[in-house]
Length: 165
Image (tube, rainbow, N blue to C red; front, side, top):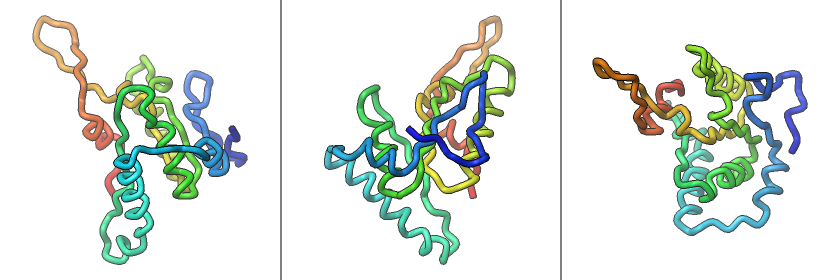
């Protein structure tokens, strides 16, 4: 798949790109024969319709709902749905595997995530954060015990990283 052909390259972590950039035409090839369950298609179409009303939302100074959480076990079509959404919105897709940017040094993971969001702000795109459960955890400590990691809601974790405009 093609990577972005501009001077602005994807941020790197551990010597590799933190994500993969797909042009709209590459996304369209992946979803050429996609078949979505009716309920799944309805949710995506509603999201795309709302996103298409961007001017109306801006006219009334209302923030447009521009985030979607896709969840489910492996193999249920989350990544393919991201390709479909990018194709329908006619935007490039940045696919980021969050488990690949987790870093053992304090603060590096947050810095890597911030770099991805800064890169995505540079031009309109669909940003798909795959393997989100790798960062959607919080630490809980109790006296005389090791730190325990417990799941946090994906929405709560996302809100910690996404600015609200």
